Image (cartoon, rainbow, N blue to C red; front, side, top):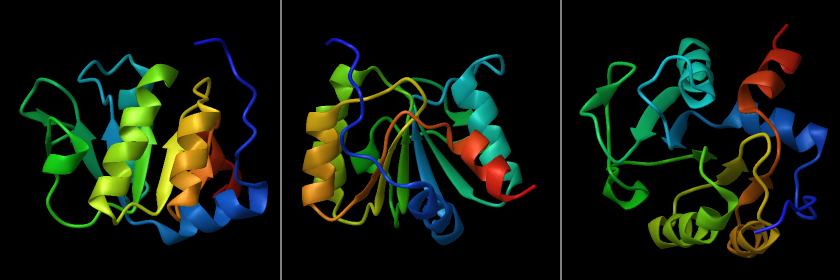
Length: 143
């Protein structure tokens, strides 16, 4: 897939509202490698008070939290899905969010855009953020 410009995206005001409202964040593609962006962002969000749920194909725990193999395996409520995956994987992520029925926010990290998946998520009532780093956005409003 070519790089896309996000045509479906939350405004700055909506991003502030999202970060103030969500409590539980499933981090898709959370690497156990502390040098990776996904690890640093998830660690920051956990330290900021969010409940982090790692979703990764291997490992048993990351950041002291139980790792799930897929979004659909997670028990309980997931407020936001924070995505560290390639853009072509986002349609399947949107489908899993829709299947869960409880995801309120579909957040694709900096550099990740898939307008088709974003539109699908939005049509199913999710707030959508693309091409923004949740850690950077949180720092901007909590200085």
